[in-house]
Structure formats: C-alpha cells, structure tokens
Image (tube, rainbow, N blue to C red; front, side, top):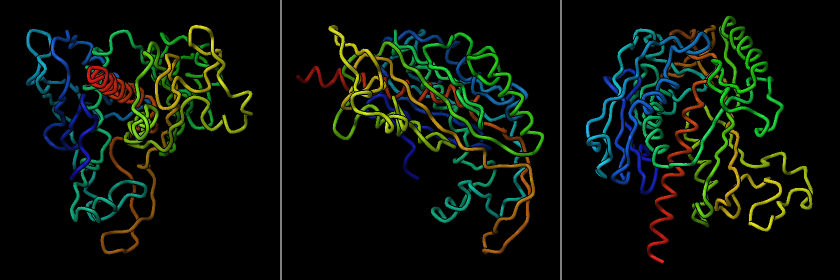
Length: 356
C-alpha cells in the first residue's frame, strides 16, 4: 500500500489502523535544535480526540502520544522523530455485522476490490483515526513555524452558516464551545442542530475555515507545486473532505476583473485580498484563508440497504460510536495539515535560496 507519506523535506509517514494496537508516525526532515513544548503537542491531540463533548463520538481514548526518537533534552536532534498513540478503547464487535458487506459511501468496497482484503473493524487504515498522527506532526510543525499564526474554526454546519468576515471574529472564542465556532450565538445554534441530528440517527456536514497570518513572502514552487495546490492536496487528503477553495473561491466567478483585482499599496501589501494571500502559486505576505468542505458522516444509525461481497442486496444498520458531524474535531486536523505544508515549503525555500 503506497501513499502513506506526505511532504518533500519536512516529511511525515503514518502507520496503524483504527482497531490495531496503535497508530503513529515518523517525522523526518525536522531541523535540529528546535525546543519542543510536548504539553502543547498533547494539547493539540486533546482537541482532536474522541469523547470530548456530547456532539462527537463517545469512543473513550486518552490519545496520549509517546515519543521514541528524534528528541533529546527537550530539543529536536535532526533525526527521525518516531511516535505512537496506543488504541485502548476498541470495540471491534461493533463492526462484525459488516464483515461481509459494504457500507455506502465508505471505503469498504474499493479497499476490498483494490487489495483483495480489508480490515472491516472501524474501516482499518481508512478510518479517520489515522489523522491523530497528523495532528502530532502538525503540532511540531507549528512550533517550527515560529511567528506564523494558524487558526481554523467551524464556519458552517448544514445550512447554518456564519455570515461574518474572519476579520470580524475573535479567534480566542474558538475553543469556548464544543462546535469550535468563534461566534457564540451561531455556535449555540449549531450545537443544538447537531444534537437534533444525532437523535434522528443521522449525520450532517459542514465547513472549516482556516486563516494563516504572518506568512512570509515567497513560499510556493511554481509551476506544479504552487502553494495553494499543495494546501488543496493536504486538505483533500483528510477523511470526509469534499471541497477546497481559497481566497475569493467560487464566489469570485461572479465578480468583474476590476472588482476582483487586489490593488497594491506602496509597501507591496494589497488593499483587498481576493487572492487569499497567494499569487502565482507563491505567498504574498497577506493572510492566507481557505474553506474546507466536509461531507455528512457516512455511518448513519438507521436501517439501510446495501450489497454483500457476492453482490446480493442486504439490509443492515449502522452500529457503534460515530460522530454526527465531524467538523468540530476536524479543526485541529486542518490546522495540522496547514502547518505541515508551510513547514515543508519553508525548508524548500531555504534550500533553493542557498543554491542561488
């Protein structure tokens, strides 16, 4: 199975399955001498872990990260950083009913057809539990990117949409509610809606918005490795993501060029930022902002029709512990993947400048 490594220089390889002994990763290419706050790394994991509120899956995992290499006396050594997060609360019997059938809109069918074998327990390698390893690496990347501020938040749940520009929001409010929406009134509406959806045994999707500030000018490698292209790849690699747009995004198509162009100030900054902080695939020093769309969770606690391995139609019903809406727990994952991209491009930029 290929496709388990992300990055060029600041490179993460993850391993493990949802119901295996552990998940984890190896982070290679991290420069030496970076002082690491391991409590801050654990805090990021705590933001992602299950069971943290009434609107997420009630799987109880401590998600405590253990480091095995690459760190000495609180600093990175420049060697591969190996780590693991042990799985302690698996309930594999919750998935025995789908051993020989396929859940709609899951990876079950394609994994079976591609590999001729699949781990049906919680989706195995295709489970979103794999993203915990990304959060660990992303937390390290954040500390490498000293001065760069990455804030993601929930801006939409179903049809409930936060109708405010990010400049109007107080990012300190993001962690003040379980939805991770920085607007208290909208957060309350979203929370109530998710609870209602959960009672119905159904699920709902949403949007995570990310804002990155203090990014230096010059990150990005045209023509095929544009910064926004790599951010798009990073976000689309996250489970349940269905869309990515940056800057003016799809709304920009309704504007005229005279309206959409970002006029310059004398210092090189721009009066507007429809470009989303990236021009020609290279960061321009303005805020980078983008939206990530997440589909409704595929597992619904309702009866549904599907097919088994022989192609026969069968009736089944979702069981186990699942999120009615993934976006609150996806916030730290979006931040982590953003940090990994920026860390990698920072090192690429340094390498290229040294050659010049």
